[in-house]
Each structure stands twice: as C-alpha cells, then as structure tokens.
Picture (cartoon, rainbow, N blue to C red):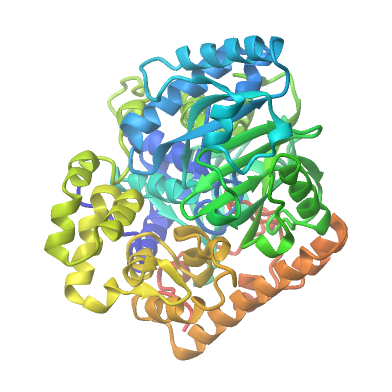
Length: 607
C-alpha cells in the first residue's frame, strides 16, 4: 500500500476539507486512543476528522514504559478477563497489526522466598502464558539462583534466591501512534496536528461539531460532525468544561518518571521487573540503552510539560541500586522523560463501565467520551467508544454501521514486513547501506522503507548519520517532515526519533543539522531554523534545571519558564492543550471568530 504523506500540503487540504464538509465522526485527541478511534471509524466506512492540539502522541502516549503487556498484577487481583483481553491484544499487535513496531522482550522476575513464592508466582505466570490465545511468545522458565545470575550478572547476589523468566512485548509508543494516524489517513480520515479545539458547536442540546483553531497558520474553522468523540486523556475534564456540563467522568493525573541509561552501565541479558513499596521497578532493554522506571505520584501542575524532580530521580536510582551490584549514579543518566497516567477517579449514573481500566460516557447527545485504560488495550477502547458514538447512526442507504474490523487491519508498514525483513541482506547490497542500518530502518518503518530508500537514491548524503545521534540517518529527519507530519524540530527529536532522551546532550548537537534538513521540506527561512533550534535548546536547559529541584512545585516552575511553541509563534495562548488532548478551555462556540478562509490559505509554516 502506497502511503499518504502527511506533509504540509496534506495538512492544508485536510483543514480545507474540515471547514467545508460535515463528517460522520470528529475525534478530538491525537494520542493512541484518539488515533485508534479515527482508524476504527474510518475502516467502518465512516467519514472521519481527527484533530490534535500539539503533535501525535505529544502527551502520555509518547512517555509510557513502552510495554505491550497483559498486566501480571491483575492476576493477583483475580481480574482474569482484563488480563485475557490485554494478552489477546498483545498477540494481535505482535503478529498482525504492527510486527515491525512491536517485538518480544524477556523479563526476569526475581524471587526472594524459596518455596511459596516460586509456587505462587509460578502459577500466575503459567496462567499468564496460557491466557493470550495463540502462542505469540516463548513460555516462562523457572531458574535457579545460579542460572538467573548467568542471565543477570549485574544483579546483587543477595537480592534473589531464584527467578522466573517470562516474555512480554515492547513498542516505540510515539511511532506507533503516528503510524495509526497515517493509517487512518490512508483509509480516508482527514487528520491534522496543531489544531486546538476552543469550543463545541451545538444545535439545541446536541453537540454537532467543534471550533478548531489552526495554531500554525492562524484562523479558526467550524468542523461539523454527526458525532464527536473525545479521547483526551488527562484533559478529559476540560471537554466537560467546553461543553458546559457536569463531569460524567473525572480523571486525575499520576506522574510516571523514567530514566534512560547506556546499555553498558547495567550488566543484564534480559529485562528486569521487581516490586517496590510504591510502584513497580522496570529495567527494560531499549536498543543501546536501558529504560529505568517508574514512579507513581499524583500530579496537579502543568499537564503539557510535567517535570521530574531530584526526588523522583533519587527514588528510581535508590530502587534500581537495591538490586544492582554496580550502583547507578546521576552521571550515568542520558535522558529523563515524564508521562501522566489518566486514572479514573469518579463516574456518574449515565456512564457505562466497560472494564476496570476504561470508561465510555455520553454526557450530551452527539458527544461521547472515553477515559482511563492503558496503551496495550487502546484498540478495545477505540472500538468501544466508536460503538457507543455510532449507536444511533445509519449509513446513507439506511443500513447498520458495520462492526469494528481493526483486529484485522495492519498499520502502515506492517503489510509485507516479514518479506522485507527476509530481504534485508539483499536490500543492503542493493543500496550500499550496512545491513545493521537496513534492519534499523525496517524496525522503524516496516515495508515503507522503500520510500526512505528512494530519498537516499536521489541524495546520497541522506544515508549519512546525524551528527551527535549516530543511531539515526539524515533521511529520517527529511522523511519525518515530508511524510510523518512533523512540523517542528521537537517533533523529530522527541517523537519521530528518540534523540532527545538517547543522547548525552539531549539532542543539542543534533538540533542544528536536523532543523537544516527539515527546512527545505517545510519552507523554513534561516530565521525560522534559528528560532526552532533556540527554542529546543531552551527546553533542554529548562528540563535539566527542573531535574535538579527538590520537589514537584519547584521543578514545575523551572520547566514552565522555557518558551512554549506558540508563546513564540502567536503570543501567549489561553486555555489548556495537550498532546493526546487536542482540547483547550478557550472561547465557546458562540464567541469564536470562525475564519475558514484564513485557515485554508495559511502558509505552509511560519517563515
């Protein structure tokens, strides 16, 4: 399948179409659930618009533990249905939906008691192995202490008496969300980032669309829709404020902090999972790095840019060092990232509880809201919210809306991936790239790799690595801007790639080159290139400074001091917007100045 490039011209066309047409479904929020809902609706044959205030996965969906898992802890709570559901989704993602982006990862689960714990946890892991349907991963193994230390020589000998080895899966969370959005566009959805919802349209008591502000080019449009779906994560309460409704779902934010350290700092041949008194400690292999996480603390400060404090970092180092023979120090940390979990904290009578993890509600006719859940079961959440939204819709010929088919729909790059993977040696010989580079591209782009190879064929310099980030090729920055909807430098450094957390300088060295590669694609002037780089450097400086502060309040104040994207572009903006949210508490629909022509005629980007 030839992909639909989400370049600047596509975005202008999508906004023009949003201003002129009425859609069956408008989805607000470009996180994993919102992008999944857009794909679900589009593959049922519905006309779909998807808007996101920042970038694809800019909020929680790019800052997770990057695991696709069933949730061992739910077995202890006897929530077998939830575990079975998540494991079924894990199998679909591994085998059908995204085999290029989701891959197996082994974990070691250390045991601290010789008999009862091995029996108790072993029985749970055996059940975990058998509940996911078709075999997708190797079965677990019981290990003696000696065998466990052979797989994990970097563990303290006194931290275990034995272990169980089992498998789960991991994903590049931000790339997967972007792939979902691109796949939705492939099936006819009109999708656009940097589009903030500032109000909801109404006719009588029914919600009939939204007022959307184009944060890139200026102007506002009215997007009309028969049904509006809100998948806005930790911004869920803001949707109720826009609708001027009592919240039918209440969501609170829980902060999860992760550290990134080089692979050579921890001597393990496997991932590691261990309980702490407050959370779970993960040490997860991530390319040439480890992810160490996570925390679980309430957060009621800035939701767009949650900050890690010194206390968070010390907490993670303390608990990691409790099981590692060679302690980690702050000098070992390459990167830090922070995500906010949207946890359900209340429901109303008109709410349908679909699982322990997520809820779908219809607070007003024409408006359906989904909240809670976890990354692994995004597809089920998307299906459930679209099911609820289209319950009273009919097709143009009066037939019932088709059921969801997303369990059978691969995301862009999955179709033909296995064959391309088998051809990787031949691709390397044909292109002159080292096979390791070809494998890197295949694991990130799947069968779309030919589109990048065509760019390299036209400009051989794009096969070179990015200065200061030699895991990535120059072509990836160009492709991010031309095909993957990246509109700003931070989109590439933090989400299309992971340079911002995988390099010692947080992407400072790479920033000028990446901006220069994006410039001709997006029509940037030299002044815009400088502005993009300066803003990114200010962000890095603020993040580093915040991580030296003792508590959340101090860290938040320092992080917020960095200039935000649209503070610079359009002056300080009102309301609240977030990646995965797409909604802000701005003017109501009746007060909005709607200027469809201004949006449609906006320049491709700021010159």
